[in-house]
Length: 173
Image 1 (cartoon, rainbow, N blue to C red):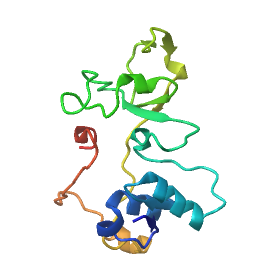
Image 2 (image 1 turned 90 degrees about the vertical axis):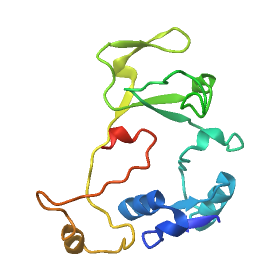
Image 3 (image 1 turned 135 degrees about the vertical axis):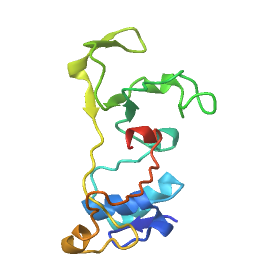
Image 4 (image 1 turned 60 degrees about the horizontal axis):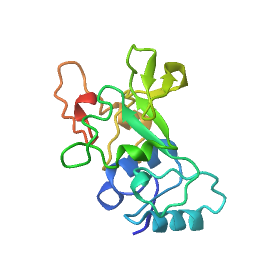
């Protein structure tokens, strides 16, 4: 580590999620527990990069950043607002100050929400996103033709095993 990730990288070396993202998007990517080293490796390989997104970068205080995005599950919100292990937050609520909050999935039907400072935020000012299945991907052999990928799609009444590594897997299932 650090390791550059490409469409031919192997999940057991760089991780399944980086392999999937690199294969589907072709974007330049590097992985490393030390985010500074990953960014240095990425910039060495791709010196013309203009934007770097660090997944789970909020906890890496040494990273210089221009924008902070915090993605929040709209259905769960901030739970009991406590940090791990008594809650599910990795950072205290105070980390929201100055950050852009993106609500994952459909926001509540209430047209406004109270922010930490007591100000009302109009729902039209909130960014939202949702999960949607796209296509099957064989992570152990990412260089398959479209015809080969189509041949692995299940038919009606076939058995499918699903594995989720997201923080709230009920959303996926």
